[in-house]
Length: 320
Figure 1 (cartoon, helix red, strand yellow):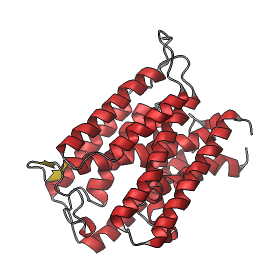
Figure 2 (cartoon, helix red, strand yellow; figure 1 turned 90 degrees about the horizontal axis):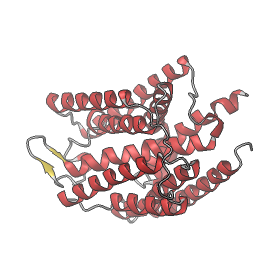
Figure 3 (spheres, one colour; figure 1 turned 30 degrees about the vertical axis):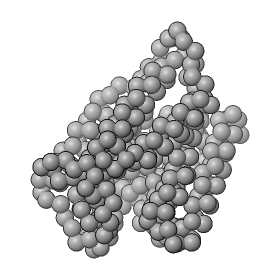
Figure 4 (cartoon, helix red, strand yellow; figure 1 turned 30 degrees about the horizontal axis):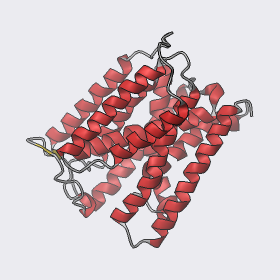
């Protein structure tokens, strides 16, 4: 195997994670693409790759990666940019008082949105797409020990970059108690992920398995409902129920003997297309008068569709 083919999924994940997490979402407009990728790739891409490689080396599957993704979200929102604790983060008042948690000083809405968003879109969607594009190496590690160590350093470097730029702009540091609590929470979530065992297929087939098309429609509906939840306690409950129901149903369906990569693709398609339309909503909210941002939304949405087209072709023709 050539070095280019060997490291292609590594480079792909490094690029795809920040693109989905920031640009497809619309929180970074297209004119900032080059500069923002340089700043965000080490943290987003490095974090996604570190999560994927660690989980696969441990012989774990998606439950572990989801928990690692939750820890990643807490670390970013609480320890790095500290947006969850900063009530005036970049002079926005969006969601700052939505569903406040007494005595803790944070918004339950923000906690669910930030962590849930990172778990689903910053981590899981990019990992799943790149794995589906490399079906022969889908569940095997892509890096050796030196490579994994280098990615860990890259991630820490990325965290330092984002922290430094955010602090220079905000001049905000959360309290020691808040930082310690967040660090402990992330650590405990990582431990849970480490000790989770990989799901094993069962022979159950008492009912027909849901079709990939129907699963994709359901994924799009569920992720869209989560993305557009109301900014209050009702929205928090709404979002938690969607996540729990999705976990239960997917865990149940994925244990069926006929569960396939097409089902994985259907789930990812629904989630990615949610961010494709969500990017327009974010642009309307953040910079409605920025013409280039709107143009970027169109370009990025078309790129998402093209990526899904390439991925499904790869699934159907894994040898090409």
